Length: 340
Image (tube, helix red, strand yellow):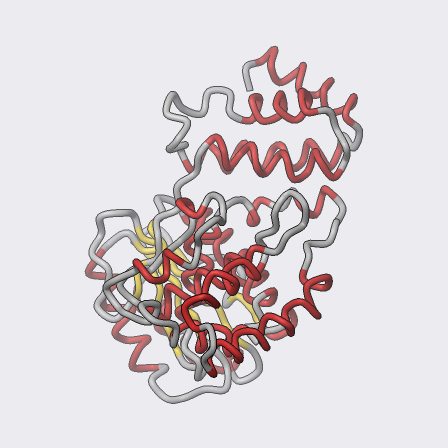
C-alpha cells in the first residue's frame, strides 16, 4: 500500500517535479512540526517516500493519523479525475488498517533503547533510498565515533522491519559490530578478505555491513573493491554502511546520509515517551531530562554525540534498575550531588 500511495502521489500536479519541492511541501499543510522532517528536495520520489514513511507513525494528540491528512491535502487538486478516485480508494484502505497502525504501548524499558534515540533522519533516508530490486548499496553516516554507527545499524534493522523492507529474522549485521579501519585495528586488506563470508550470509539474509573509516583514500579503496565483489544481483539487500567523520570525502557512488544532530528537545522527547507510559508527574519527567543534560554543552541545539550516548546508556540502566518514580528520583538525587 505504501508503494501504491507513493506512485499515486507522484502523479499529483507539481508533486513529482525534481528540484522543486513546493508541490510536495503543500501536501504538508496543517501538519505540525514539518520543519523537522527529513526531506530530499532534489529527488521527488525519494522526498515523497520519506514523507510517507515519517507520517506513517505520526499521530496527533487526539489520535488523528497524519498520513490521512497528507492524502486529504492531495485530493482537492485531483478532484473529479481518475487519480482522485484512486487516492480516495487508498484513503479508504488506510482507514481500515488505521487502528492496527497506531503505536502500541510497550514496556518503558523497551522504549528506552538507546538505538531508538533520534537517528530517524539518516535511518529513514537510508530505507527510502534502498533500491526496489535487492542489490549492494553504499551509504555514509557522518559520525565522529563508531558507537553511533553501531546504533544506526540497530535502528536500521528495526525500522526496516517496521517499514516492511525485511522481517526481523531476515536481516543480520555482518560481524555484529563495526569494523574499524586504521593501522591499530583493521587494515583495508582484512576488510576485503571478509567479502566471501558476507556473501555466504547474504545468500540467506539481508545484510547490513558497518565499517568505520576516517581516511578518504582507505574509504575509496574499500568501496571500489566491495562494489566489484558484490556487483552481481542477489536475492537480499547488502547495505554497506561507512561511518566517516564529517568533512571527509565520500567515495563516489555512495550516498551521504543526513548528519545526526542531537538537541535537548530530543532528550526531552526520549524521556517523555517513557515517563508518560508510566504516568509519572510532568515535573519528574522534566527533572530526569535535566539530569541527563547536566554538563553536556552550553549549546543545547547541538549536543556532543559521544558524551550524550554515554549519558543515555547510563540512564537506560538507571530506569532498568529503578522502575518507580520515587526510586528514580532518589537515584537522580545521588547523580546531582556528584554532578553527573
